[in-house]
Structures are given as structure tokens and as C-alpha cells.
Amino acid sequence: MSPVSKKLEQHPYDLLLLDVSLPDRNGLDMLKEIHRRDPQLSVVLITAYGSIEMARAAFKNGAMDYITKPWSNDEIASQGGAGRGIAPASRPKTSSQTAP
Image (cartoon, rainbow, N blue to C red; front, side, top):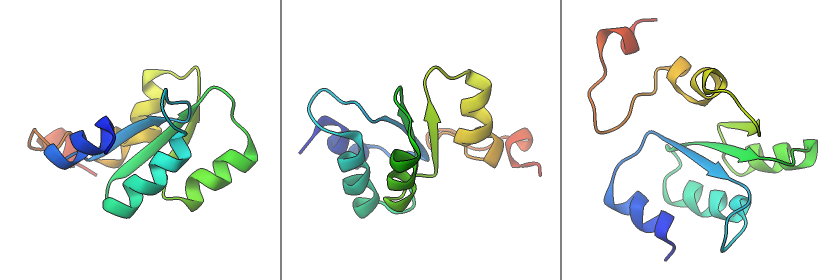
């Protein structure tokens, strides 16, 4: 079991930022495994070498979004979850996070 898989089993997460280029495996393969284990987990796939084919594969395999490097924190917030009302699992949502 990979370190990421162990972490995901130990703690609940609402959002995972996953790089395509991982030291020990391909991020798309990891995305498949993560989505199979927890289809409700929102995963944003990140890559330095974006392509239409990779974006299609990301969405086909359960990614919520696909962002190319470099990115801004505002982009992560708006595309990656904060703009969609996703809060860290360890903290309760505040009134500003639950407002429409």
C-alpha cells in the first residue's frame, strides 16, 4: 500500500491535490485507485505537461478538475474546491464557507 493510500485510510479528506508525476508511480494510476476506494473524494490532478488527452484521462478516471503548473492559489481556491464550498474535513464549515 502506498503512503498516500495509508494517509487516505487514516484521515478523512474532502479534497486531494494529486500530481501526475510521482516518485514511485503515475498520478493517473493513483487517481484510479483513489477513486475506486473513495468515489466521493474530490481530486484535482496537477501537471506541468498538460494535454487534452491527459485532461480527458483525468476526468474519465474521476478527477474533479485538472490544473497545469504553475498555478496561482486563487486558481486552486476557485477550481479546486474552496469556491465550491469544500472545507477541510478536520474543521467544521464556517458561515462564510456555507453561504451560496
